Every structure is written in C-alpha cells, then in structure tokens.
Amino acid sequence: MCHEQGIDVPYEQLNGDTLRRMIQEFVTRDGSNWDEDGCSLEEKVEQVLRQLRAKQVKLVFDQQSQTANLVVCR
Image (spheres, rainbow, N blue to C red):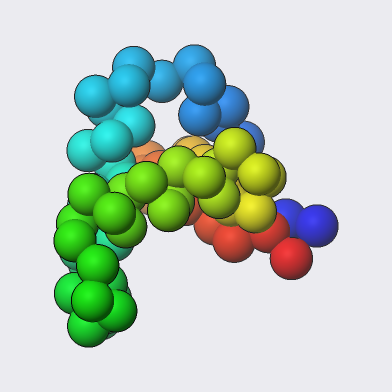
C-alpha cells in the first residue's frame, strides 16, 4: 500500500515528455546513485516507468509545497 500526503496523479494523464523529465529529475536528485548502478540515465528512466506501470511507485502532488514526487508503494 502507498502512503503519502497529497493527491495521487495518474501518470497516464501526463504528457509523455513531462513525465520523462519528471522521472529524470527524480533519478538525478542529490543523493541518488543511479550512475553507480552501471546503467544509463535512459535505462533508469525506463526502470521507473516499468515501476509506475506495475504500481510499485506512484506520482503524488503535495498541495502544501506545490511539488510532485514519485513515491514507493509498499
């Protein structure tokens, strides 16, 4: 089950380019180690897209901070 304050945003409703840029920003944030995994940025983006499709992660919009984030579902 996913737990996060905010509004769930169906990723399918986002423009494909917007979704891809959002995922790129997510995987390149400070502290992320995608480049240490030996995969390219594009490979990591594809991994996150697969996780979205499998409902392992979701998009959440936080009204208080006016930001969107990818959140792991457990």
